[in-house]
Length: 479
Image 1: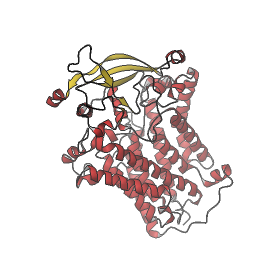
Image 2: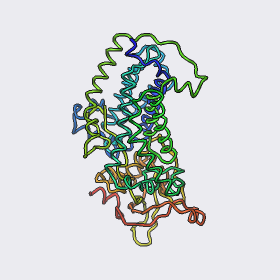
Image 3: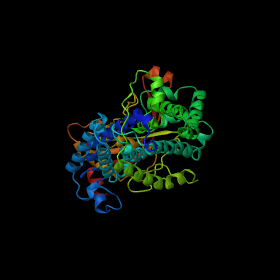
Image 4: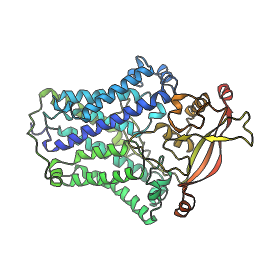
């Protein structure tokens, strides 16, 4: 069955299956650590309230049967365990149905979480992970050759991911068209990392080259993913290089890592062996069984039909960014940073234990793990891990309309809620919770080299205004 199998993509299948499984492992660990505090029974946006007003056909989730924090953690731990077996390659050693079942279980389990995750799970890389997990389920095991249709579809996924990101920029802010976007991006991105300040202070001509390279990588290179070898492999290599630069200079959860994994769908074994001559050749796989061929054809037909909506979106003047056209997060629209923020605003949350929050009151700041706070502190590297609370704090500073979670967050600080406080890096009130909290807005910028030498500060900040005036637990309760 020569038309069905792509025998020269064995290494690609290994990377795709194990890489996607590794991303699922990180996603489930993130859920274990953060979901109860953010979305649990006593979370900032309790999932049970959403489930009470929706039906399964609107938001497919196992939790429509019953939700509890214990059940959520059990599902996440099971998902993490299945992910580990796939990262180790154990199901791939069995018949084709075994890794298929494992990946479909991961997809169904994580879909149940994402569909009740509300704002804390409303990121494009959640949909990307779900789509990738569903598709790689049909790559089979080492007993059969990787199905050619699935390899091609994974390139189509990568194509949409890259081209969608490029088009949303060209149609978005002027800064992408006048090549000034990277003058600001490294400083104003949601969560800078240790090298973001260095990247920001690179010469302006280098930032122009960054924008030009971005346009080439996202608007031109994706078309070569479907070219004959070795052109397709070279195109994939270019995309991998651009993603590595994004990894070095920022924190975007597992988005960049998963994109690199998907790029291997365009790299054949011949190219890899040309680069690594010591790589051994495996035995020729057997013909795929009829039932596996039938399932792959059915899945490919479903994905082809669902591709109509995101394909049409690419050519729309009102292009949607990070949108799902079905409740199962299959065949989605992607994109990021259609506009680049020119100024960095940060919301700083503070507490006070004085009886009255007057002029002489002492206010102490809560510190988040990833987002800037203390001007002296170096930004940390957290990706591919996803700090969901920190990301929503970035959107809050930009003027996000959905602030329900933030009001509850302030209540939890005044209550001294342990789960919420574990989400933070620094809790200045270790004995008793404060009597008052407030939220101030500051303008942040990276310190210049001279400022850094003089004061040691990595950020320079100035107060812009007050987002939430001093409030007590009683006042918030009345609201």
